[in-house]
Amino acid sequence: MSNQNDKLKQLKTSSMDRRLSIAKASLLAGTRWAASNATTMFSSDAEKEKKRKKAMKEQADYLVSEIGKLKGSIVKIGQMMALYGEHFLPEEITQALNTLNNQTIALAWPAIKQHLEQQLGSKLHDLTIDHEPLGTASLAQVHRATRKSDGLEIVLKIQYPGVADAIDSDMSLFKNMLKLTRIVPQTREFDQWFDEVREMLHREVNYEIEAATTRRFADRLKDDPRYVVPHIIDDYCTDQILCMTFERGVPINSPVMLSLPQERRNQLGEASLEIAVREIFEWGEMQTDPNFGNYLVRLGNGVDNKDKIVLLDFGAIRQFDEHLLSVARNLIQAGYHHNIDEMINAMTGYEFFDSIPQSIKPDMAKVFLLATEAFSTTTNNPDLPEGVMDEQQRYDWKKSQLHSRVMQRASKSMASRYFSVPPKEFMFISRKFIGAYTFMTVIDAKTNVRKMVEKFL
Image (cartoon, rainbow, N blue to C red):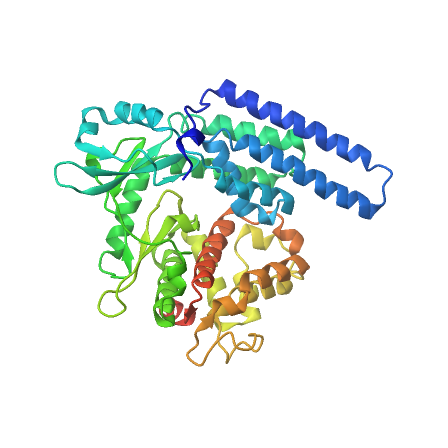
């Protein structure tokens, strides 16, 4: 946690302040970019490419450093572009945007206290609140508290003042910045993706929706001892404060996780992926932010007290229509059978797939078959790398290096140009599964994925 001297005393919430900051940064970056292009006019192709990459990295790093000073939705936009932008952004851009996750400076306690007084009024006296935040993000920060009357431990997710009202203007600012700097191609697909980000941000700052979603998932999982969902405490909820019970656990990437016996890690891995499978096949809505900060693990004793996954954040829930869900289920089923003809047939009835020439689909189907490799079996998939699946059909995620293999195959595929900006819905679904895959890789789990999906097929 940063010390008090590192904290922001106030936010730049006025549209004029934010507009001037971004305009200045954009114009400077755009000028630098044009100048760097001019200096390569008489260089060789190889030298031009080298200088282009270097200049792009410098401009991206500069812009990101300026964005990081503003907080609010403009930072969140950058973070989401880092998360989903690997399909359509240059590598130098996504690398720079990824650093935004490390630039979440806290808002100082006096400003937070003033905001709490405005939101909670006299109810604030019911609580003893830690002045140091448990965590900070682009849209909010979280403070631990205790209710004086009964000692109940809670957390307050406190939305930064003014960020909800700034979303639309921030989106326009960010889009203008991209145009001025000319580092991202402006296409119809990119506009559609940008509109989706706008909708997601408006949903994410709506704490009434998040509270209802948290209750919905808590009800679904209440009888499953593998999961913990915080309880919403209505007394201290407002449109800019979400209050819930404090839930203990250790981070996914904590060293203690790898010290657990293999079987316990396997069970945690299965639980993490089963959530994604049930979201697609059963619930029709998905937590689309795979950030590890949204999860904890509450360790049991390995005997009668199970290890549990603590699900912390339901702000990035995305609901999908039945048509899209049917397509996604068919793709998974084709992967389960590891059948290329079935995979090609699954890629129909959806605008993105229907726009692809039939001659390209077999090549794209091979990418999807690789991505769903863990759903197949040694008996139907002769392409499984040696040693990644044991006799109990448990898939070794760490050994498989599946994500990097999929990205390599996709980049070399004849269909790669059709992935320039994939459908926004598929980006969200794929990122969720990549998050679950990464979860299992980090804890070195071996899981039987087929067993999870076969009851739905």
